Length: 394
Figure 1 (cartoon, rainbow, N blue to C red):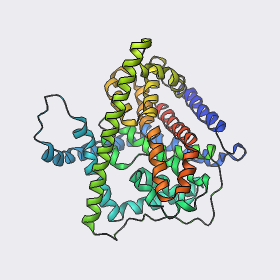
Figure 2 (cartoon, one colour):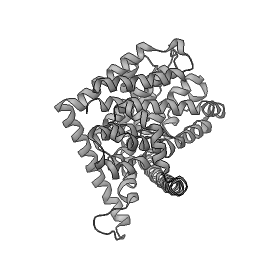
Figure 3 (tube, one colour):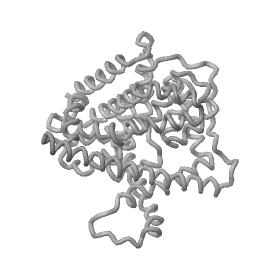
Figure 4 (tube, one colour):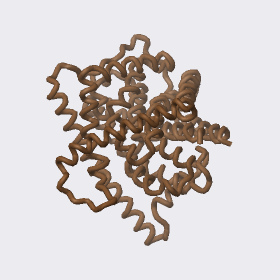
């Protein structure tokens, strides 16, 4: 039965991708096949072998250890707050550690560890997929650096990109999540699904782009190096990353306050008027999609609601809700929705990407705004593909 739902999920993704494709005659089936096989290999090793399962467990434990180290700085600054036993403050325990993780990313970037990994991982991905050096580099780098910072690494190339290539890098930015966010995600959903989703989403974004936005990359394309390096003093770079991490945590907190309050308002308003909550209502819309992905029938409304919540608000709002109801869902439903939520595919991210690119090139920013809905649809399809593949093993 798992194989049947793997097929239905893939067919769903392909059919919708075909319908919104800009060039249906030139869909890159060879690239899709190679990337999909790589996804199957990665997911099989990670989720279906003892070595892979143990490795994911160790990675999760490592990130939990990092969260404990981050608590040293958080406790020093906010230690005066009195919190009742058995409870925690989301901002302090989940968001503030982003500052510490961001600092680590800055150090690894400064000493050229991350540029080395990104360069050669991108090179290998390009050899397998044939997506192009720039696209492959960006797909990997956006999973480490996040946005909007990642766009600065190709700021000289952005004004020169065709509309097709611009779509691909934007889709990668929406489907990936930055390394600074991973530890915070693992406080809300199982770490193994976070790690697997990060790997699969890199490939899912390229698969969807090969359907929705097919083109042959330029042969004379040159691999881009990360622009940030050792040009600035170490402590200046470190300070910048720390401040960026803090600003990111504040931004996420502000968005959560606004979006959670908005969803609460809508739920109570809908309950008062039609006796059904807003999240339950949108759950019915996404329930058929959840079913085709392999979610058990008893869970499709809850999972559908979480899928819609992520699209309308952001992944943190949906993860927070999932964290509270995970015990009521089956193992398979938890696996699928946990993997699905690990991406930036939501309406708010469209604004971030458009603004980031527009700040570099006003013309290119207008292009992104023009295909923004198709971009959001493609990124959502990438999340569906990732969730479907993960669900196959449960």
